[in-house]
Image (tube, rainbow, N blue to C red; front, top):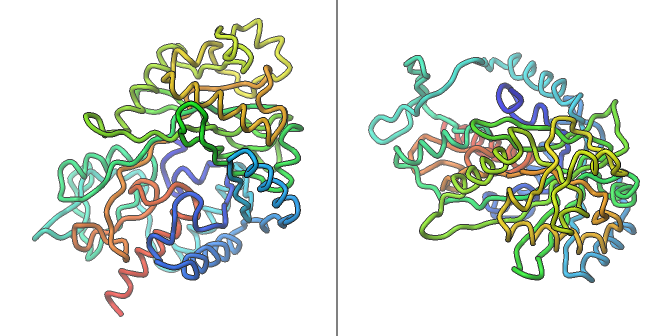
Amino acid sequence: DIMSGIGGAGTYSDGTVNLRPDIGGNLRDYTKNDREAWKLVEYIEEILSEHGMPEPKKEDSDQEEKLRRRAASLGARFFPIRQAHIGSDRAPAVISSFKEELEARGVSFRTETEVKDILIENSEGKGVITVEGEEIRAKNVVLAPGRVGIDWVQDLTDRLPLEADFAPIDIGVRVEVPSIIMDPVIDVNRDPKFHLYTKSYDDFVRTFCTNHKGFVVKEKYDGFIGVNGHSMKDKETDKTNFAFLVRTHLTEPLEDTTKYGKAIAQLATTIGGGKPIVQRMGDLRDGRRSTHSRIDRNPVQPTLNDYTPGDISMALPERAVIDIKEGLEMLNEIIPGVDSSATLLYAPEIKFYANHLKVDDGLQTSIPNLYAAGDGAGLSHDIVNAAATGILAGRSIREKFS
């Protein structure tokens, strides 16, 4: 299970580390100033470097400025980021090194142990209860179940006095193009971040999780499938893939974005016969489904073998499909070739975000002695921000005893 275990989903991710406080969350929400937010990022970089993270790529300020100017001329934004790339094949070694140091400092790990509930006494967090009924008591508890724990956190907020807000959801596709098309941008940033607003609906669309010379992969969830991407340090393809996602907020009568996203993912899974749907960009524009014969003669061949040629407009909401087409057309003005007829689109790629638990400056929830951190608690969306929230929670607990 690539979503669970020590290191969580990050252990088997692409291992791209974005060294900014405002990508994958906003640390300023918790530090209240830029200086402290950047100090956290620097601290995380130092720790990861000690455990095997490669040196961040040197920045090319002239090329960054050209990309920013080009994006701005189209009403889009490009975010220059210092980035380090660990790689899916090397990330487990970094996590193992980190684990060994923690064990040497007296930290114990209980794997293969599922937590069922939070132990609450006198309206305070007092520990956890496992599925076997064992009570593990603690003076303070940190709720950090990772992305795989989103549904569990939702269940906790339904049953416990845990205050939370519904988070938005990102719905879209994974785009795959020849790597040569992305080379000029990758030379500036390995995981380039572009933010755009579409013409018809003024919806927010973004690029995410670029895997240069990487692979598209299938992800299995409870009741549906999805797609993602990864790249390795020691194994390359001649393709590059990235997520292209539409931000969706819901209001009354349905505010539960997770339920909405699952309904879309289940429909896409049904239409794809339990496999991701793949469609050529040209076929989507022409209003026809892709077929095996069209994919077979397509200049861009899929790096994922287990797929169903189809029509993503039958799987995703019409509004999202229009946003994707318009967004890629705009992105093509910045990166020529991403919108070509041969470009491959994989669906569904849906980013579920946990309900955002309400926390104070020390990351303590509305239940005293119960703290929150990371993606599963809705406080972050990437490696650096997840790590930073864990550090802030840990420091707050330490201050209680100092």
